[in-house]
Amino acid sequence: MRLLQPAEIPCQEVVELISDYLEGALPARERRRLEHHLAGCPHCSAYLAQMRETLRLTGRLVPEDLSPEMQREFADVYRRWRAES
Amino acid sequence: MSFHAPRLRWSRGRREATDADVHLLMRLREGDEDAFVTLVSKHHDPMLRLARTFVHSHAVAEEVVQDTWVGVLRGIDRFEGRSSLRTWLLAILVNRARTAGTREARSIAASDSDSFVAAVDASRFDSSGAWSSPPEQWVEDLEDRIGARALREQILAALVDMPERQRAVVMLRDVDGLRSEEVCQVLDLSAANERVLLHRGRSRLRQALEDTVEAVGA
Image (cartoon, rainbow over all chains, first blue to last red; front, side, top):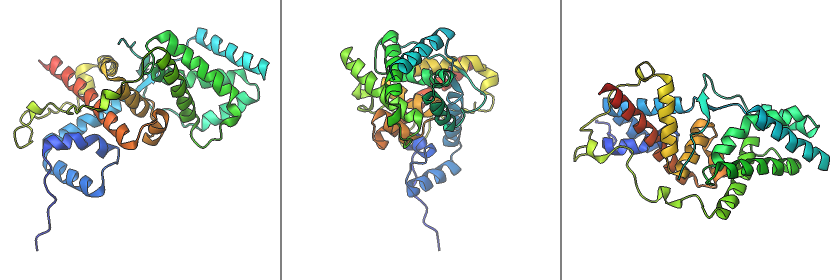
């Protein structure tokens, strides 16, 4: 008996599903179709790797520290609040 | 619209857990000024960046952030810990920024998600939808080829070019590391809408990196 193969998704559609896939937001059936496609498509796998790298690099951006001047301003905000409460 | 490049640098690791916030909150309730300044320092930049997606001017955005902290201090006893402190702060900020944005006769463009923009240009696929111009393998040696500083600048430039709502979602989710439910809560978006905006924003960032690789390789 031949196992039913999931219907093929075209690459053009795969790239539109990648973010939902990475977010864990795809329904199980759709996730399986996507993973089946990725297993046989080096181009879409490369695309997925690029998206993962993009997220890794974006996640490495962190805020600069607050300037001493701003720290003083916020300390004043706090003191005014303490005085009024 | 002009948007100043966010003041962001690279980090080697992710940010610490938010339990520390609750501890700071307790200390500031007890009158510890340093605890307040530490808390502000930690959240100031994400707040300022988020405010800038609602208002034109940097000065107004700074006022919105300061006003938010005043509101937070006055309403501190209303924080019940049902959401993370960060989500609570950012949601207060968005309310205030929306009001300020309306006063500035500007509201966040609702059109970001209205028109479909493909993640990858249609010209790169054949009529069956298969790649005709497939992505190249550049992930492994990206930092060696481009350099960390140039990569950071490319990402920041792509964020600056992004429509406001996409930028707000990408920054909260991928830079500040909020969970998607928190992003929805802060920006008052449906889960589906949040994912559309995130997808479009991330696709732009990936494309920006690909363009950079091509420009260097050419």
